[in-house]
Length: 481
Figure: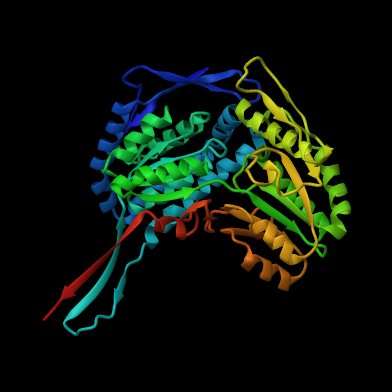
């Protein structure tokens, strides 16, 4: 069992009260360790440290900030096995999948080390020969980053990297379920020599930490990945100090398969888009729309693949899917399936789960599940399930598919499978989503903008777009004689 501390102003510290919280292994409910729980005193210390560090960090040449980040990137790759094993232990995903996430996390650090050197200003032609117009880009300031449990490594670096590349100190608040991945990553940032105050790590009660960060005017930006309900709350509470805010919120991704699609490819891509991380992914397929003429053939191919998925602890050989994060997640999945069945859906495979271990909060698994004859009034077609369940609804026309797909408050990711170039372009342009996978079930990548429309969030992460939200634009009007 491990015990970890908070990281504040370059030092690892216990909380002033000595309070800790438990971290459980979702595979069997066993105790992974204890993490120090930050209170208001620690949050204020972190804010003060970040405020003190911001000017010196922002004034460093971009190449110098990049050099720290390159050292950090190298250390992440050298320690990828340790971080991956930590992730599987506290989050549950298969070890090979965890290793892939660590490498993705490192890629964000590498990318933004380069982007730090490409923050360009402008000169604009003035309306008078006696004036010159100059536009500068400068760091927003102290940033609070709040990250989720489902990607406890890549979400940390996807937020911290563009912030510190832009010159902003960051206070990280990882999810209570998965703080140890963040600890491992920040230990390596410290080892890379990133100056004190530039990065802090505060774990613990979200209400105390979040409210203190939101109320303090020294914190100029909030970047958050999580539920839409929490995102709305952060927007409201950020208003009092008019903070910059970036939100990557809930999704309810439609996956449309037309009758001219390559069915084998559509099935193979769907496996990754749904089964990865036990379906606990914001861009995971949640609603599957299949054109009626191919529904039977498609379901047959898909059910064969689903029936062969091997479940278990992420450390077991050949495991493709691990546990759900906790009992609450299991209950939601079960509720969605039961609601659909009660309203006329037909079960093709799965539809049940099991529990390992003695702890009632962890050790929950749910078998990969396919439902057909699904209708729009079922909960599973309205709410994000966050589990390995695929509800399938048939459609007749392209117009109907678009109407069904766009009938959601969410607009994060969507998927389209067709061999028609014209149809692919046409449908992609009409889908009300920030991300479209056209014949591609895995569109997320470090160099592309990640974010959603409607209630799925504000702003974009990734690529050169990702650093923009950490920069203020300053206009300087120069009078000359």
